[in-house]
Length: 429
Image 1: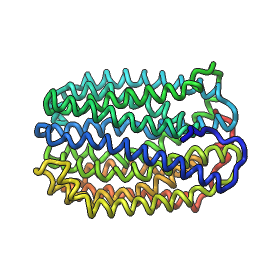
Image 2: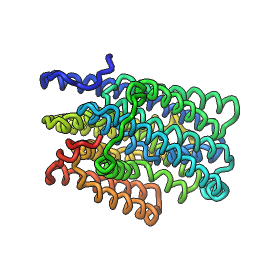
Image 3: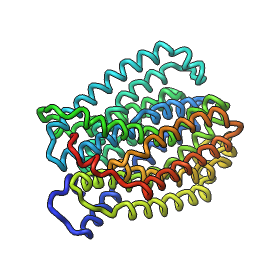
Image 4: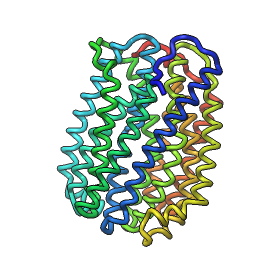
């Protein structure tokens, strides 16, 4: 499979469709393979000491709550647009600025975390500070990976984008297995695997995007850039919060055994996003490219239908087969709880997956009027989790309700609002 980048010569609708499904298929394979390898780490849960798996899931959730998705989508949008409008030197300057800026923010954030270390360890019930220190380093490379992964996605270089996903999973599983079996059942050993995986994946993405960010940079229009970047960041950050925040709240309100069970069910359920996510990932830079050139595209309908079929089918599959998988993967002591929450968790992912497609379409076209609603929804969701957590099922009901509200908002703004293609078609980067 070739690493197709920007389409310059006109091609037929059939060829567009064929390329889309070929690229989506490859990313789906890579996403599922990489996700399965990452999920394979959870097989090691039976070897961990009591409470350590909950610590691992919490540290992993902390990494997941980094603004990885909005950062990657900003770079994807800016790369696709820059290539469509032949502004690569301006893009190079922006990449370097964001790269150095994230490093500076990481230094400040790490200093704050280390200063509050004792309080954090006590609040989350973590016995070994090494897990926290490793997590801080993971956070650094987890912010660099979406920068350069976003460049690959914007280039439509899906071949190497897929390889970064799989290599991330290979490194994570291999090192975690060695650490757990050789050094004992501690969360820090599993986090070491996460660290190696993300370091290698980030390095690969940097190498493959070198031809763009090595260019001599030139000045770019800050005002126009911020007008696009800020709503993109806020929109995708709100979506990511709705996708990941529940696990951290669970750690604060429930026992270690309940947290372990909930984390296990959540890992299985979020695998649905590995399945359907590539459809939206391939769609996004194509729509940005089409909007920048004022071209029409009918990708949304195809992607939405595919996402609906795959997510509903996957949720039903988890409902039927999930209890058997849970018994194989996780310790017997929390199988009952994990099986009880799994159907709720799986079906809560269906509206989230559909909303993801519609949101990608809106933001790729520069239709940012949905963003304030998303921010309000995310804030309300966080507040609701602090008030309604009487049981694990209650938390999942809150999650499901807010995902439905998210989907409703995306549907409303997609079909009732006029897309603001002009916002993305104008010069920025």
